[in-house]
Length: 272
Image (cartoon, rainbow, N blue to C red; front, side, top):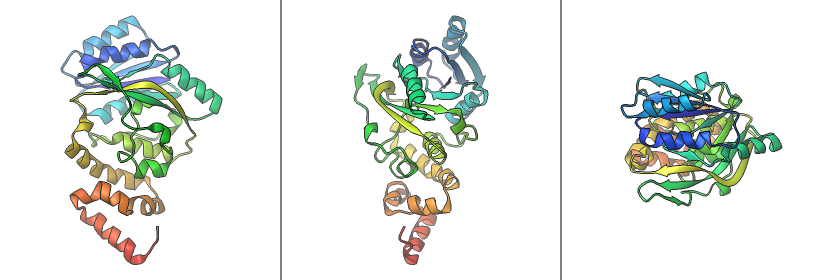
């Protein structure tokens, strides 16, 4: 498997992140650290791990954003499965082993494990911010319920490279790029297995981009253009042109085009 670790000025947490990879009980992996133009100790930390373990690789690029950094990792990854891991998060030592065993037992091409939240300020592990055990892992749920009922930390997943072979994260998105990835995956022949064990840790701290509600609302709006491209005409009317979706994602900014389409749908009595 290939582990892709993008890092921008997260050198403070990178050592703990890479250490959690090095300690994995399953050992057949490569780890690609993509330095996205960091101005801190990211390069120094990463290169120390290169000296310790040849399974670590290091790539530097000028700052282009999280999506670009992940895409760089995807471009050079050699593994049959992809494990994304942001530089400020970390893994349980059994994450790879349990995921691989589950894939072999269920013949799935996507395995999702549960998670815990780690509070940096208090240095305490907390319960997850959503209950993944109650999620229906399908296209409809990914479109309609994302951020409303749940979201999946990207490092919960071990993903077959076949589900990502023709996918790249939208470079213009500064957030919600993972939402686009999940919709893209579930548009394909995705056989999902869920392991209800907390095998990854999602770090909660003041620098999390997702904590800024105004920022995330704007990014959701931008993500809609990509979602429209991914969905068929029927799916777009089934999922996007719904009062529920409208009220959650569109209404706060009074998107005029969406409003016109929604009114047209009601006038035509499509009943979708």
